[in-house]
Image 1 (cartoon, helix red, strand yellow):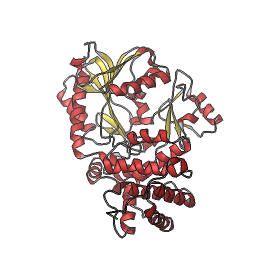
Image 2 (cartoon, rainbow, N blue to C red):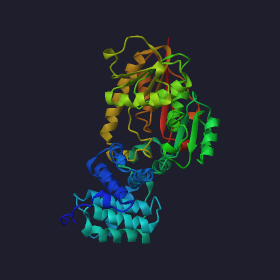
Image 3 (cartoon, one colour):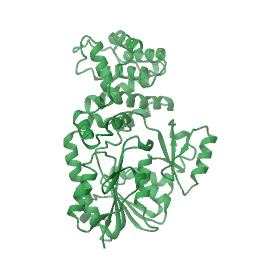
Image 4 (spheres, helix red, strand yellow):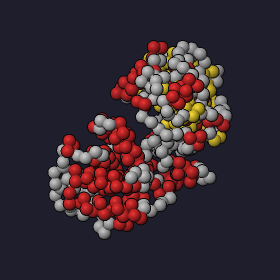
Length: 446
């Protein structure tokens, strides 16, 4: 199959049976992500508006996530069951087969509908001559099941080795938790009501929800729903934000009316949370990418907290280019990182992250720490946070910073923020139902 026969023309979407366009789009998205190194988030942003029904959009996302989480097992099944491997130009056909496997395996969809829609998708993609092969492979998957594989096999060797090194006792749990779909975490806007009132509204809407033991604004939905179904979401009463990200506000805890810098603010959720808790904060939300400022402004507008905030495009690592010299009482540095703590939400990290990326990120994090600390007022607090689980980006990064910065100290955080990691705390993926996240609360001595 390395030299396939010419494909027949694809059928227009208007003539496709229900469910077929979703499978076609899933195959195309995955082919771009796996075969061409594209971002899953970017591809879904383009693909989702092509489906009118919210159920189809939800299925598209579920299919893509399921395939990326179980890709190593699906690749192994194809290698075992096919007499000849698919050619390098067969990315979309390979992705469609994996989409078929995911329906039967991870998503447990009704087999008849899954097979029918996926075979029809092959025809719709101009693969009439391969439709029989698709049908045969999916029927074998239905009959025999996809072979089980250890969760660590989904991870590139270098990443698995680092996790083993950093977290030897927790490594297997990290691998497993990173391949499981996350619950939907919500944040209640204190300016619009209480968590108890929102729980009552969710119950009235027939949505199962639980108050989090950690995070006083957090609600967990064990079974995610579309945000359009959430009461008050459009008006900013609720926001989608993982528990670990919500705890940033608890760890920073700026004093009332403080001058606050969110140094890498887009898309603005953490800054909005701080303002929901204290509208008197003088907050500057900064991001290096001007295109991302729109997301921050939209977040502020939806939650109704932007009146006292400023939004600015600037490089936090280069204060001389924008800073007026007036120090900040509190600084949030949610630093760019490897995202190894949120693989369950960004499974394409397993495909795209490289060892050289870690070296570059560590250097950038160090520059940001040094620059932000310079802008911190004496007695002020800087919260260094990442969604990484690698000690090089977290514990070792903070240790190095404290060694080279005589005026810096740290304020301990308690075990509500995860495992003790010397000057910081580390939550690992899935613990407390939350994402992997690191926090270190740093102090500027007077």
